[in-house]
Image 1 (cartoon, one colour):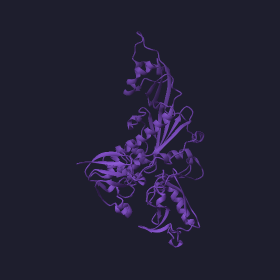
Image 2 (tube, one colour):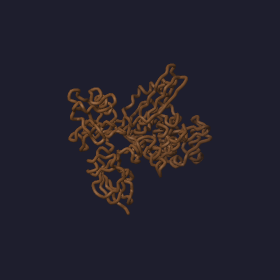
Image 3 (cartoon, one colour):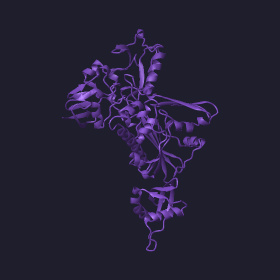
Image 4 (cartoon, one colour):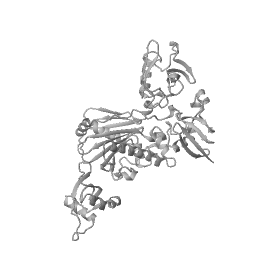
Length: 506
């Protein structure tokens, strides 16, 4: 039996089988609901409201207040579809459009750091302008041999020339479109010279590269003009894999499920393609002019990007499939926007210390310093490197949840509706707060949590043990379902029709 499930406010309808898990139905519809645990029933974040229809619900009650249960709230991950449904995804369970992720890069600072680290702008891909003799009755060799001869004449050893099928199918048309004046993008692997792409006319000054940071929570892409090192633009987005779990462990577990690995890879590649297209359109760059893409991320993220099973990273003795991945083409991972681009990934260090840390160490040069330095990367996956020119040691931990609301009753990421700054009056204990997007609040993010805890302690709302001091007599202190709690925003102030509180458990 089939049922139609409509999700509001997106007004998206999907048809699913009877008894389908509602969290799976959400994903099938292509809409988003928060879930730190990847739908395992452990975080209580995937709250939805059943407006019409019948479900079979499991262990939702431990995560829901009596008021929420009365209003039809349930957890999507423990609910099963038993009829046609109309389901509302409330504001606190949605990924909002406005969020704080990344700022633009400063070209001068990056070039200075790169120079200090001994880096250069040259990639392994070379652009060469060729003026090829057109064919005649007397000189009637094939287009491919004509290209080989021109490359030999330009100083390249083209005896072992490789041109793939995609390139060969375009070769006759590009040569004639450019009136036998073309630019070849070539790449040497040992004694083999490969033609990656061919462009009509002289495009040697239109060379671009992309640097991609695949974070567990966010993905950032920098578009770089390879002729001068200028950072043309920066684009960022949330990593769509978050709907399969917030941290690397839940992603690894998800990857072991049916089609999970393929889905996770597709989500990351789609994000990167979208950002590359956005940067190319905004800066009037033809995507095929992006020759080289460098990818860095933690070990799990790089495995997922390449579509390689990361399962053994989480099992003792915690071994990745590889520390360094081979050079590949964009088409190998489904990067349709630039299938011919060469993709290089920065080598990983160990199971939970990835290429992003390798890149950070190289640029900061702590491996060349006499004195001992400490390099800290606080992301969803947090890493620390300690050492100098003689030795380096590193460790990793799950840092992000502390800054993204995991385990906090009204915790959330730094997106629209999140309380990000808090001040408490020392005399009245009243609260002033700032919300991302200047809208009504739906929760509190990491910076807001740090502010709130500091203000609560400094103004005597909590003691040194984190216990709420009921004896101060503030109307904002009350007893809730899990014990004492402090009200940051009253019901009339919030966008979720209930008070936003910090509990003693928080």
